Length: 309
Image 1 (tube, one colour):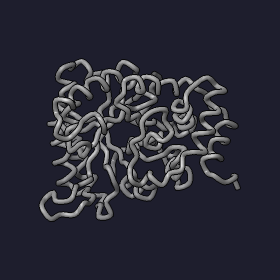
Image 2 (cartoon, one colour):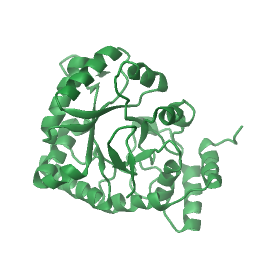
Image 3 (cartoon, one colour):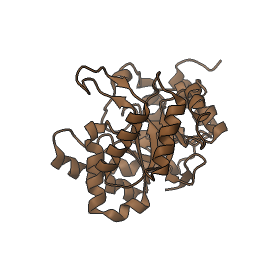
Image 4 (tube, rainbow, N blue to C red):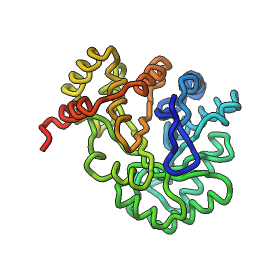
């Protein structure tokens, strides 16, 4: 699979990334490893090199399961880019606390150290802030990043779900450029096309990572696993348009929905989340599809539900 730079850093990644959210199930560690091993090795064999994690995925079990795969096959470490995230804290942690976002220095550093232990590695290639914290002190975050860099625990930093103004606020406090902004974007979630996120990514050479690029599976050829916020999505018209185009091109709906994202000049990297080895492999077909400007806009018009102004 073709590789592209991650932002303006020395890191490079495959055109599609593999998302590790679903490779583990809380309370089923033995099954976790079997699922993780199949999925991760299928992704590596298919050419994926960026593996996306977060400290909260399956309460840390996803990182633990991935770490077990690395221990079994240590040669993988030099072939892949490992990304993980911090900043979301669940309710009752500690007791009585609300669900919240925490980008304080202490939480960033402690979360990083815990992720390193679960993954069984010495350095995280790409460390991201999972959600913007309205109490974020950019200078405090910059200090935490500097501490982690100097300790050799993190190579590069990025953000996730940040709006352009939030990215700009943090970036002005940092000595090095942010590498990525991980955002939800798909034919069912078009916000990044109008909120300035993709324009900022192009101008600042920040790589946009697309989470849920198939709308939680609503645009895929397989199973659906949507978040509460995605229950309001109305995929019927987009699915119909993708199916018609897929028949004409002799490809799949999944590949076309991903190819639509790949066509954007910001260099979007869709994150594939299936644990089915066959679906992990077939998604790669998207990287061989060239979507024309006319096809791109026809799908956009259907996704918008109204004509362009």
